[in-house]
Length: 315
Image (cartoon, rainbow, N blue to C red; front, side, top):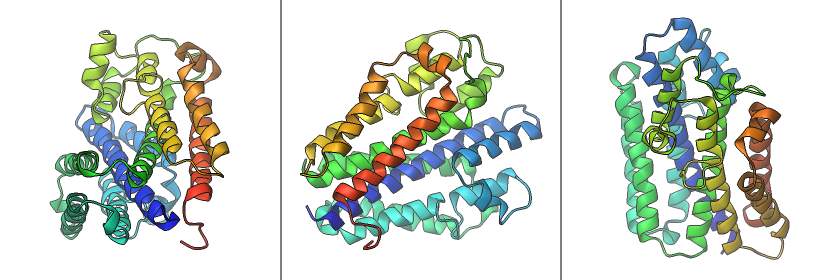
């Protein structure tokens, strides 16, 4: 496959997944805002999330204070913010348009209609967009895009590069969501009840993991179990272990003469998680582990770009 085609497919999927990750973060904060929290608590949570997403500086360059409505619009539908949901869906559509011949017509139509709908929403203004309905719409469109991709695409290199992009972005997103809640995940944290179980139930619901948590652990929500579910459960679709397994398997399907080291590092990431125990990670310090993990995801993305995709100077 031509590197430019692989590049567009990889980034098309990354941007769709990134939009969903952002929607899930907004969903968590929207649900929290409906609970009887103090205003300062919600602002602190929003600040931690923006730091985890590395967008606090960009936000403060245009806004004096952290205000929920302004944060929502900045993350969701700001045309001038390169990492808003609107910008991600636009980038996904543009990457898909560049390689329409490698996509099925159903997949192209799904991505194109998603962009047209979100563009119309952005034209309304903050007062006319319901936060809850919007984040659910973004998640549904992401689910639809993946479903159409899985249900219609040939299992060839185009499909594998698309899957690599999806799971690399998902791994990064899950790690950042946990990073935004790392206050309850300090080194040596005990498996006792968290100070605010409602906040963690909201987080689990935003990740479509609340019912799964209840089925697997059955008891009170604790930081140890939440982290275990989202990091080390191989059967949890959004866990770090599951994402790393998918990345490694799909990389093996597109291997070339210069990708051996990239494949080895992907396998190492999967192996470390596969053989880790949550108790050891907590003692070591989960915030430190998450910081190292996001660094490895970034390094793996750079190596994939170097081995398979269009060099930045040509993009």
